[in-house]
Length: 112
Length: 112
Image 1 (tube, each protein chain N blue to C red):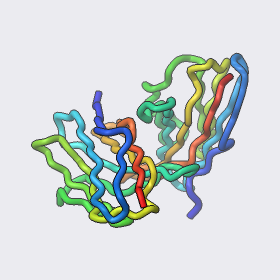
Image 2: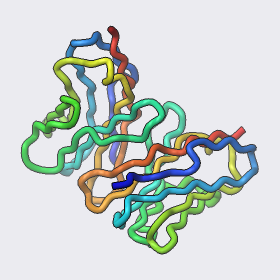
Image 3: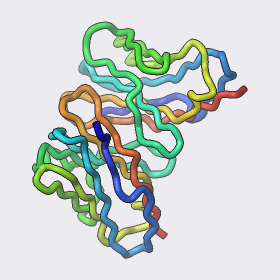
Image 4: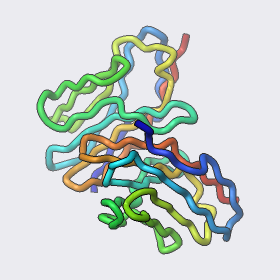
C-alpha cells in the first residue's frame, strides 16, 4: 500500500510570503498525484493534479506543484500567500486502482 | 452542474444506535467512493462503486458498515450498531474517469 507523508501538520506564513507545503509518497510506479484543499465547513476541492506529461503543474488560485520522481515528492507552492488561502491541504496519490491514499493534511494559517 | 451532495451534514448518535449516511453523486458519474477521516488522521478509503456494483470494499472497517448504491445512482452507508471509534467525517466522491474526484462536503458523525 502507498503511504503519503505531509511534513508539518500546521504551517504559518505571513501574507505575501511564499507558501510551501511538502508531500512525499512511496511508490515504485509512476503515480497519479493530487492536491486538495478544504476550507472551513466545505468539502474537498481539487487544487491541481499530475497524471502524465509536464512535471510542473499549475492549479487554481495561483498554486502549483512539481512532480519530482527522483525525490518521490509533489510539493505545493504559491509565490504570495493571501488571507483567503487559510485552509487545510491534502496531498493524495493514486496508482492503478481507483483507490487514493491521502496524507494527514496540513493546516495553513496566513498571518496578516 | 450540481456537485456531490451528502446528507446529513452532521449527526450525533449514541453508541449502539444506527445511522445512515447518504450520498448523491454528480449525475452520470459511474464511480462513487466513500472515504473517512478520523480526527487528526489521514483520509482513508472505504469502498468504491462502479454503477451499482462494489468494485473494491477493502477499506471497510468491519461488518457493522454496509454500503449500497441503488440503481447506480445515490449511495447509502449504514453503521449498525455505531461504536465510539466510528466518529469522524465521512466523505463521498464521484468521478467519471481517473482525473480526480469531486468530493461532497462530508458528514460529520459523532458517536457518544
